[in-house]
Length: 91
Image (tube, rainbow, N blue to C red):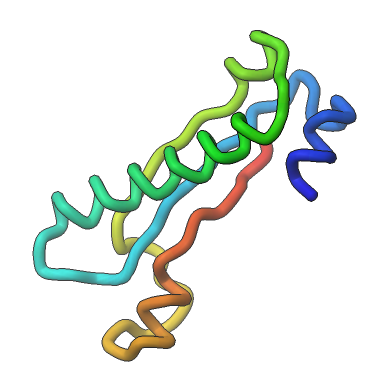
């Protein structure tokens, strides 16, 4: 659905951020790296699905913030799944 919407140029001229988060694990550096990789993977999957112009490609960025901004408590399988996510922010 997002790929189809991007193809329509609805977000032309706007920045699209793929922002990764994950559950809290002891190694914060690894948390950030993992969330960055997850966001980059989602962006790459989207780019593989759509054909974009260079201008549109330049407005899509991936980043990761590790375990900040959890949506629920960590420590359970469900909580970890909920906090392990990639959000799409449009500016």
